[in-house]
Image (tube, rainbow over all chains, first blue to last red):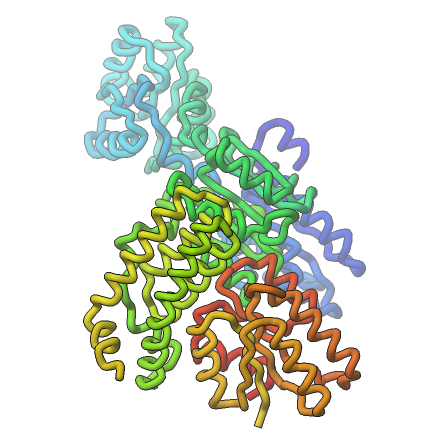
Length: 489
Length: 131
C-alpha cells in the first residue's frame, strides 16, 4: 500500500488480515491502513477463529468492513469478497468507501478548457454534451475522424474525447493521423468494447487512455483531472478554509493529514487551544470549523457561541467531534447552540472528510436569527413548563411581568454608577425571566445586554437598555399579556 | 415526603421551580448561597436533611459552584452516611459546558438548563431516583 501510495496510485480493493489471538497487532494494522489511506477505496476483512467471539462493534471500530470465520469455506470467502468488492457490507457498521473525487467533481469549473468531442451518434453526443455542461465546458464537435483531424489541425485543444467506431475515418485511424503530424494533445478513447485487446488497439493508435461507454460524469471527470493539469487550481476547494481545534496533538495531526489528503487545495489551520481558536476565527475566517468540545482555556461551546453571536461568521460550518456520550448534557448543550453536525468518537476519518464534503455544499446551519425571527410572546413556552396547568401558567406569567420594572431599573442604576457586574447580573436575570414566559425578543435584547456588560461595551449597553424597554412595551401590548395584567386585583 | 431546597436569586425561575417541585416534595426556598448554607446547617443539625437541592450557578455573592463545595463539606463534617447525601442539581441559563463540568468535578449530580420544564425536571428526578 505504501509503495502504491508513494507512486501516486490509488489502491482499490480488499485487504485480508488475520485477526490473531492477541488482536492488538491486527487492529493496529487495520488502523494504520484506515488512517493513512482512509480516503481510498479499501475494504478490510478480518479472518477470525471460530472459538473467539469478536464483537462486530470492536471490528468496526478498528476499521474492518467484514469478517470471515475459520475454517474458511470457498462459499463464505466468495460471498464476503463479493460483498466487500460491491460494498454490500450490510453486516457491519462501516459504510462503503466513496471516491472523494465524486464530491468535488460537480463543482469543477472547466470553462477555460478547449475540448473536442468526436462522436458520430447524435444521442451519444448529446449525452456527452450534457455531462460537459456540468463542468461549464461546451466542447467543439466533430462527427467523424476526418473532421477531427481537420479541427485539431486548426485549433489547439486541451483534450480530445474520441469515439472509436465512426464512418469515413474511425477513431484509431484519426488518432494515427493526428499523432503522425506530431500533435501531442491528450486523446481519450470512448469505446463500447471495453476488452483488453481493444484497449491495446487504442494505445497502439496513439491514444492516451480510454473510457468505456456508456460514459458518465465520473469517467469524464477522471479523464479531465488526469490530463488537464491547470484544472486542479480551478477547483473550488482552493476556497476552502478549515480550522481544526483539538487539544490531543496526535488526533489533531491525524485529522489534519486526513483532511489535507481529501482536500489537497484546502487551506488548513490547526490549534490546540480554545482561545487561540477564537482569535484565529477573525483573521482566518474559516468556512469549516472542526472542533473538539473539551479544550484548554476556552471549550468548544465557548468557540461556537462566539461564532454564532457574530454575523460575519454566518457562513461558517461547525462540525463538532467528541468523545462524550451522545446523550450527555454537554452534547445537548452544544447541539442547542446551533452546529451543523456532531461526530462521536470513535469515528472513521472517512466520515469526517465526507461530512466536510457534504456540508460545504449546504448553507450554514447558523442559528443566528434576526430580531424579527423571534416572537414577542410564545405562550407555548409556559405550556411546556406547566403542561395543562393553566392557573400555574397565569400565576407565573403575572408574577414574572411584575418583576421586570425593578430589574430594569436596577440595571439602569448600575449602568449609571458604572458597576458593570450589576448590569451583567440584572440583564442575566431579565433574560432568564423572559425566557421562562416565552418573551423571546425581550430575552434576546437582555442577552445582548448581558454580553455587552460582560465585555464592557458601554456604548452598546445604553442602546440595549432602551431596546429592553421597547421590547417590554411590545410584550405588554400582546393581547394575552394585556388581559392578564388587567385582571390583576 | 421528600424534602427539597431551591436556591435561586431570580424570582420567576424560583417560582417555577417551587411550583414544579411541590408535587413531589416539601419545598424550602433560599434566594442566595448564604441562605442555602444556613438552611442546610439547620437541617443537618435537626437530622432532617434535604433529599434534593437545586442550585443556581449564577448568583450574587457566593456563586453556585462555591456554594456546592460548601454544602458537600457540610455533609462531610456532619458525617452524612454514604448514599444519604443530597442530590444536587445545578441550574443555569449560561449554557457553558466548562462551568457545568467543573460542577461535576465538585460533586454535583446533574444539571438543568433554564427555562426548566416539568418534563425535563421530572426526567431528571427519575434519573436521580427521587421519584
